[in-house]
Length: 412
Ligand code: GLA
Image (cartoon, rainbow, N blue to C red; front, top):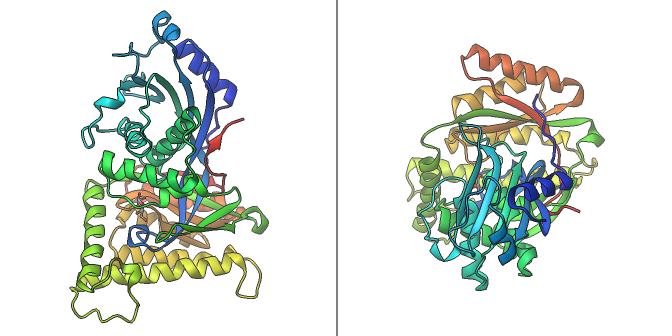
């Protein structure tokens, strides 16, 4: 199983100083997320229940003065085009083993024109200008991450949140949590051009340590739900299939459009506004299946919250949510059709080896599954999943445990 060690503030500061030649103003972290349940419900104004995981994106930020700018060549960072550019160095390496290094000027940013990792921080800078009137410039950022890229754990949203909270602090923007979530969502939707919902940003910004975040995506009301795996001697495994199927982006957009069209046909602003008893006759068979997933998934989130809060009269129970996790997977696989063979194999293998529950997470068509397991069985279940992948001739998955970490903030 893979592990990840969080960088210390001292480490981030010294890397920043070596790169840019002066001391950073501060260091910040924003976690990735695992959505326990409530998949493809956020853009339908429904319910979600993510945890912030103990893996995060880390940012050291500095504001260079004219002196710093003219007396240093910023180490391996290329010299800025102008004094006011934003320079970014990421410890993520390219194929030649070099750190990713880039820069942009806020005034030159045009939505939809940047591709890849840089589009995420650039989108945040663009949205800060649009939302607050503040033009970000003369800023240096150094980034490290323990969230695996492409695993469906929201590494890009965590990057956006980390950059936003760093800039919020340096410029004194005074954004509250809700504004941070909405701003990073607009960066993703309007600048990057990905039509995603709000669960990932909310999980990173709003979650408290040791809790899951119960979020109503219609009005962004939240409740912190206790999620203490140790108290029940449980572990949450992430199984990163390390595949991303080529239709993942188009498939996501298609599902969203289908739901919006179905809501419009039924005369509602969103699926959330519809009662389950609504007459589905005007819809196609495919639209009905998609709705069945969204309706049943919203109900599963409420049932999960009830179990975790112990309203059933039998005390709090994480163990009790296993069946709901599996039902969510089956609904995503058959009604919503966003799973893939690798995810199905991961879930089936984990369940066959004694997992309490398992399901795919995130947008689907690849990425990760989760498995809720007893501490005592965790290694065995991980090994069974590895063997199942080998038997199918799939690339070995990355299997690791996560716990409910704290939301984004400054590292002190
Ligand atoms: C991706 C998106 C989220 C959400 C999930 C599916 O992770 O970024 O907004 O829609 O897919 O639940």
